[in-house]
Image (cartoon, rainbow, N blue to C red; front, side, top):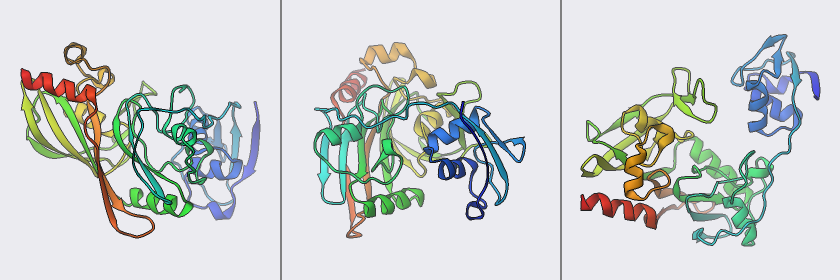
Length: 306
């Protein structure tokens, strides 16, 4: 197994450990975080966490197992909708079953792979497998994503998402009826203590804020409009489950499989319905909307028939 013993440059003073490793060793941020989480890093002789801050002159002892980094494979996705396209950005309507970008263990289609297959040139900034990607949707979530085509757009959009200057509106069908019918869930999110592929509300997690409003109520379920203030992994799914109203069709976070089967759902009822932001070139506020795909629309019809 490769290993390195090296000092932290003064220029990385105060930087998170995973970020520092990525810069010093050329790792992707994801791989650097994995190396730390699996106990592969000692900072000045002590085990360290990925969010620990480094100091100039500190000694980092790193041991890791080489792996094949994911790469972008051009695979056409006929159902991928192109909502908007110019020299700076492309806005897509992502179908369920498509990942935003390649990752270890995922062998299915991706948004960036589909764009490559369609001849789109996207920004080269970022990890090789995430070029142009400034935000993500879960594989099982459909709806709107923006991908940067120019380096200027990548920088501007990454900053806008970080500074919460992007409007992200989702529609979700959840089990039961939230009380109150509209509200805010402000609860930090982090990795689940015992399931590495899940996330959970945890005291030392990242700041996470979800606003919701009930649009329509059915027997045993509700259609919500959700405004994300932050954009954590699985945020809506985890927050609604913690609120005791998991997304319909989401067994990972407590969804009832019987209800999913009755509605004909094979994934969570969650759709990125509206996306709006300042255009990275003109500064003009642009907004896009996406209709429900057929499986989600059918589930609503069944619920309304009840």
